[in-house]
Length: 290
Image (cartoon, rainbow, N blue to C red; front, top):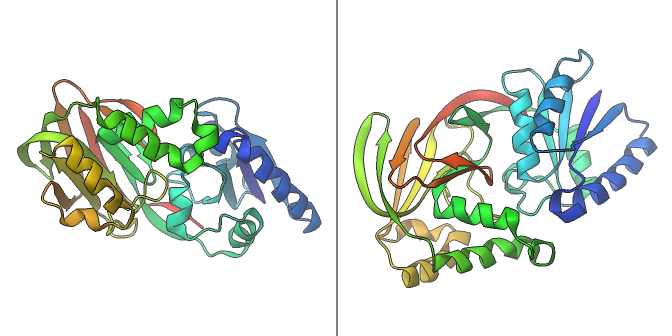
């Protein structure tokens, strides 16, 4: 049996529309399934934990955006239950990485016929993360996107809108970075993105080489660059060519610590979870996914 965890509010109500399409097809197929609906932040994790305790369950499929998938993964980590997803959010970066169709019915077929594989996850201050985490400017943008009153109309473009808006108010900070025990000071930091998949923010290739099967964190640091140059470099992120810019430093490792004064916001899979200091580490082969 498959359990579907549906966030009807994801993508400004798109989750509910997508589920109605899926439900009709599942009944046509006479599939064995259950559906539960999220009602508040963190609820998907609770629902996934409950589903994982049932012996007859072989997969839990999240219907929603990256935030919903993030929560469901938190409930399945360390179990033998497979995580699947049908994209219905605004960013859908995890689904993009997995090659899952944006067409709900095609995505459903992929879930029903796909072969599971085991992938790495991140642990960020103890919290499970499936895709990316970030410190600084990108976390501020994530917070603004989640609070945005224009998200309903701009959809994916809301990331670009909020990025440009915050570009003129964000203050870069000096930070201390410790990667696998090697500590260094970094001045004028705009952002530190830590990735387990190449994409974030609705298709931006922040860490083009990132993979959730290599046992490594991919890290992108943007520092010591003017606001106007940020605006010039930004379009290159969509192709991943920003990595050659002098203000961009790319690193790999298994454990990262970031400290700053004043504290900077932290996000995991697009959801702000607090402020620095932060500890991030790779957790190899910790989640089974379709």
